[in-house]
Length: 76
Image (cartoon, rainbow, N blue to C red; front, side, top):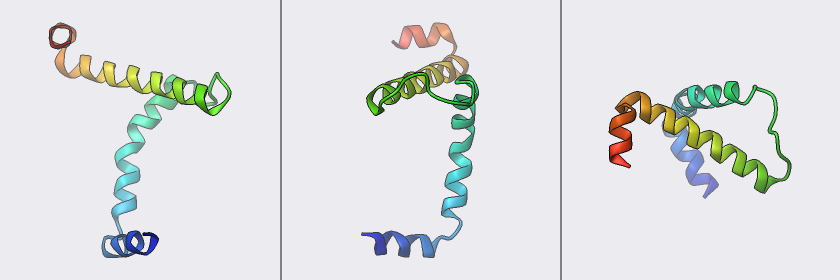
């Protein structure tokens, strides 16, 4: 499986650069909201929950910005 992944990457060397740049903006925004330093909870389960809440809030803000609050409320 690793060899197949390496072969795909060798056929498209810019893939990782493009992938890193595509996800950097949302994660940079999330880090800024979180204070850009650390999670407030401990243990993997709690940190996972905290990160999920940050991602949910980010997605809701984006949906409100794109659709508007009224349209989003009607869709829900």
